[in-house]
Image (cartoon, rainbow, N blue to C red; front, side, top):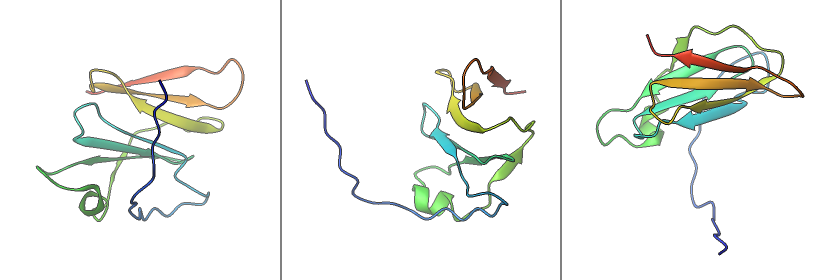
Length: 101
């Protein structure tokens, strides 16, 4: 069975950094939290009730503690939404787990 998708809309995300960012992002399993990753830092948003993404991104994201990874480009939430993972590009890289405190 093939599934097809079509891009029907988008929203601008204003992030300023020294690199061409963001490089990765994810929305939590419950749809209420958002992570965007740059090479230098991770930004976090918690959506207000019934808030659309355009309005969420009008607010400044919160910078999360993060140790820069060489070519760290991937980020995703865990299935539970209580932690997230980051991963660098390349062979034999470490998959880093970041737990909510």
